[in-house]
Image (cartoon, rainbow, N blue to C red; front, top):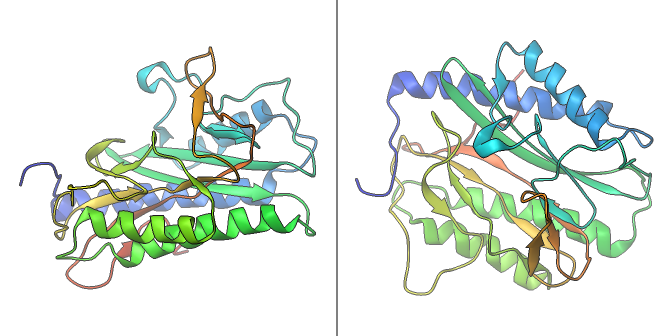
Amino acid sequence: MSGVVIHTAEEIVRIRIAAQATAWVREELRKQILPGMSTLDVDRLAGMLIMQTGGTSSFLGYNGFPGNICVSINDTVVHGIGSDNVIIGENDILSIDLGVTLNGATGDTAITLAFRENLPEEVKNLLHRTEESLHAGIKQARKGNFVRNISAAVEAVGKKAKLGIVRQYVGHGCGIKLHEEPEIPNFVVPGNRGPRLVPGMVLAIEPMFNLGSHQVYIEPDRWTVRTRDGSLSAHFEHQVLITENEPEILTCPKM
């Protein structure tokens, strides 16, 4: 089938293991990241945790990327690089995007963290709606649907919440390689429904919503992506297997 990767049963076994390793690292980072740490501290911590899984970072060295994970603070949308000079404050939000490669398979996941309980309503809404859109998209990741069904479900949540839906960066297939076909936009592309979903496909669905405009730009480091208007950005991602029945979220902790 053109434009898709359908994994074998043996590959899916390995992908499940890599995805669970990735989920474990994400949950450990969720527990261990605290205000006062630098974003480079976070990157180094992630590197140590990834090593504990027996795997390697899927991101380090990928097209020259210099970090173990993407550490993106506040108005950084994605591809943030850990820095000694960026200290996390209790009023900040922090997106972590990570992948673990293990036994020739790859997991991929992302989450946005906040560090205070009494978040401003608009920030709380940004995080809640971005994560909600992820799960809306996952519900459409079913045999017989098209990529467009996922995109439409994600977009509907973002539009209703009046959030900026990032267009330059999208979800993708992910299983043996970090990036596989097809692309999974977080918005409907007119006239393009994308491939039909069939069992054996593994998709990384990853909405990125901004509190302001959808527009972004890339810093001179050629990696760091920021919102053009300086508004906050949130990013959530799960890796999902298309099955004969319900979608299987591979990066939900099962231990």
